[in-house]
Image (tube, rainbow, N blue to C red):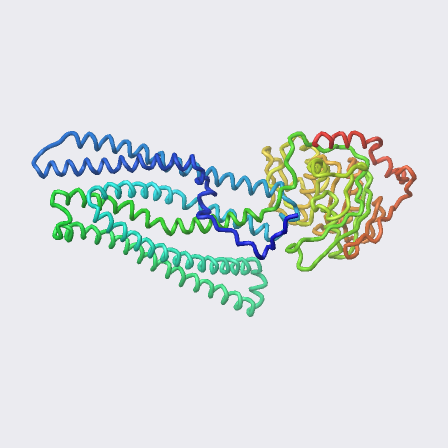
Length: 593
């Protein structure tokens, strides 16, 4: 057996020469070849147009009028335009397509990644930072693509200058290396100033957020107001100082660029002819090439800070992509949940929060629980006992670390996870009310309006005809709308997490006296968490959670040997016939495999 290498002895992974090019799809050899060839054609055409201008100028100096240089100039100008346009468009279309693919990767991670990982604060921060870095790169790309084209123009012009004056070209190369090295160092120092300024800006924005979010408390407490105001003012002053230094550095860099280019042109005009390194006849052409080089060199050097910033953003974005939640499964076009089932069972299920979700370790389980179809399950317990966590484990939003979840006696494996989850609809404590109603065939718009009227919220949610929802509602009203949406989606299991917490006295009373019965009459299995006293009168099963443990799973009615439940006549009549549902349920899940 090969000896395992200690991780401490492994050399650190080498950093790639560029994080930006692979990210924007320009590390592919075929694309790079096309770009270089296209750019070189555009640059050569640019140079030919310059040479035709120089030839025309020499002809005028000799008293001649030449037609050929003019025709060559016009043709080369058209070729230069066409190929430069193609170069920039190819660069940008390739890069933006690659960035769009990164956004699709984010989308896949959000929709198919583990729910517990998505809820993790670091994951949320990663999504925000990832989109921020994408926007930075996208904003810098147009300028960088033009600068890349100018760099090729400068390279072709430099090769032509080498054929005219070897000494001048060598001197230009040495000067470019010296100035370029100094310039890159200054650009990196400028980037560090921008990074410090960004940190100050983030702290400043966080301070403003606290001042706005806690405005009432701030106005009622002078000490807190002064403390927060002084902290924000310090961040504003720090941001101002860093931005001023950054502005001064940029001004110095750009002024040096212009000075160096003009000064170098002066060397060719004033010094080389006196030294005999260049004839008078060569002077106009060499000078025109030097002046021609000034524009692409200036554009290229001005883009160096942008490139450094884009490389920094690409490196951070690449690192963030490596921290995205792993995909739980591949979506299936044929996956559909059974609308009838016999039971859901949790067998020895345990779940522990990962680091970052809670400041202290918290584990629920082991949980052994059977939920018959059409039953009402109430979960009670003190705050922090694990009630809401159990609500997310039952539909496998939180995947158990140990144990199994079974549907009709069969374990729910990864290939059946998507269809299993489609059994459930939920209104969690942190529920999100979407801006638009579901548009699929499973949504019953008539039942939705009926439920709105039943919950006395229909007057605040008009039928707009396009599915848009009024979300300018109180927390309790939003919960009522969310319940109406959940019922109209037609899924067999309804999960309600502290649904009455933001309701008035009327709906707190109606929840146990009427709403649970309404859901039962519609044939739904109801699983809910409540703090509102004794709920055993409306439940078939009452679960009490204490410090993550299920202390009892009490049946509130007499359970028979065959698994059915003896209930009062009114309750039994309201329950739909769920007999012999196991076979079609599992057959439906098998279609997703």
